[in-house]
Image (tube, rainbow, N blue to C red; front, side, top):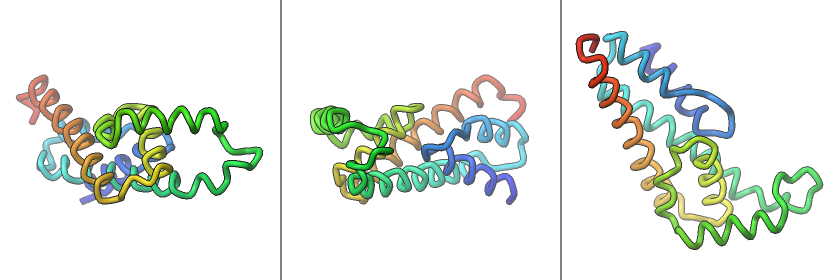
Length: 146
């Protein structure tokens, strides 16, 4: 059970604005041959999606502070992000698994009031697909170990 909790924690933190590598934890646990791969994929995906929900909530609340000196984005940057998101739409959230860009996408989605239900569904597909692809590559490269 400790491995699943550790993976969930790593995946959750990795999806927030904090640095963490959940992929390394997933591969390590897969190679240990002590955990069901399907279980690891579910735990990693759920943790990563819930971490993205934190970003979504931060985005929803962020605009209250946009006129503060310490606010990290200018009005021009916010307008550019809004134009980009409106151009590519909610389906851009399929790329929420990408490093750096993905975190920004999830915050922007909250800022622009993307409904939570569609946010979670699309982010789950993107992040889940990333973990499945990573697991498939791991199984292909290390078939005797798993």
